[in-house]
Length: 150
Image (cartoon, rainbow, N blue to C red; front, side, top):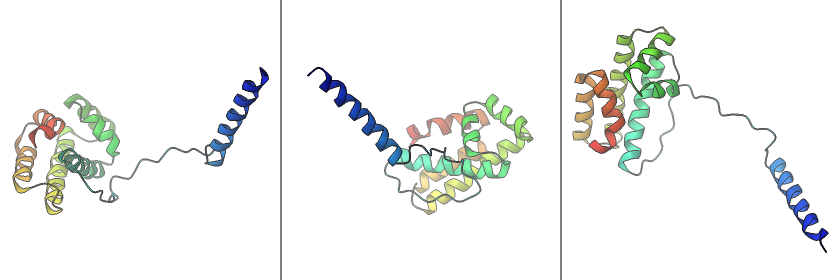
């Protein structure tokens, strides 16, 4: 009678391993990083945060494509001006080139988002003004805190 729990637990363990193998668990490959120059499929945005996220990621795609870096590297570099300077050095660009790519990317993404009805004219105007006129450090703060502005 004491052997029954042991046998049962062994059967469950073997069943879990079999299910793992049956569903392709032995052929895991990480998803490759997407090319920022390739248009991404549009996803329906529910709330304000999701719409803003699409704008910021669209801006990152445009800037990353222009700079020849991955969107992921660019987004990680948005943490601070120092991180952006490091990315500029690593990618062989000047800080001015990186800043111009970020600003242009944001203006373009805002225009596209407004055209798709993701954001309204007032929000688009505010974000475009910020992209064109704010110092880079302040612009990064706005991007990180943009959901509170909307």
